[in-house]
Length: 383
Image (cartoon, rainbow, N blue to C red; front, side):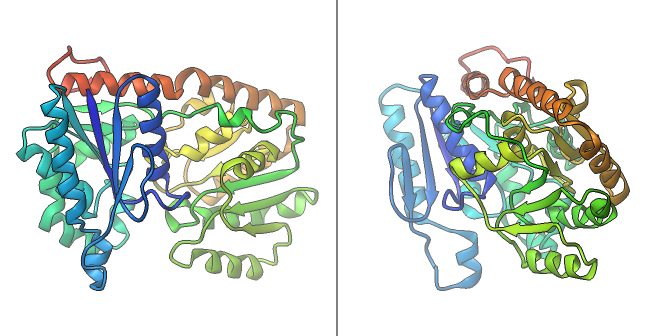
């Protein structure tokens, strides 16, 4: 079984979709299942093919990332795999751009099963940004591309419900994203925790960072030896908006930093005492899993699928809003360090048990075999 993965962008390290696809490909190969990525951009690497975007001088078409070369290579890859007598599936990742949409429709025209991973892009909050543009794209090609899927992939029950709420009745496979724990072992495990509350990832209104600033304003004066760090690239100019609000509230213990990746990101997660994701909408929230893998307790809103923070005693799962967030921050910072460390240890154990890349890869292999008609339906696929 060979899986061909089509995704628009792997270039931005803060792009959670690109990171997830790259890790999935690697874990599938480790599991003995050939996997290839086709994407737009420049350069080629082992198992990843990049293709130029056509009409790059036309603003609208440039944003849609249309690539004839990608579609041509996808056709060739499908034919090559089939000529070898192997089964092939297309796994399309993300929405609102042409590579995954046209790839899906091309594969179905060639009688190749299609898995579609929306990666949270069907949530009401995600659809509300650039709503008019997305409505036009929905009617132009996006709905037809979604309907072309043989099976949808949801990272959580929350995302399953979002897919169903839009009327799509096809099978849904609920498979959480895998977290590769190996890199987290490359940085010293005895890195000293500091009195730091961390928010790390894209700085975008969807992530609720503005709510975190407001909540911090209610607790900062009571915790003079603590600081809030907001780490990540600004999107839609949101960091400037947040900095202005920090100035208006006269907050003195808030620090903004650009994106951190690789070992630097892991070190930051390990040294922080609390991680916060006050998101308005997240189908998964890979940063939560990474923080837990680093032994850092988490505060997360109920708009991401992390209710297990409570049952696994490794964090706070709160209603969206400034007051619930301020209350959780206060509780977390008032705990003694040994209690927080115990919560962090609980979180790492939970991630290693339930969210390993090996477990995720085995589930995807089972999914691919089922849509290809080679196996019985696994229990995580709902009809």
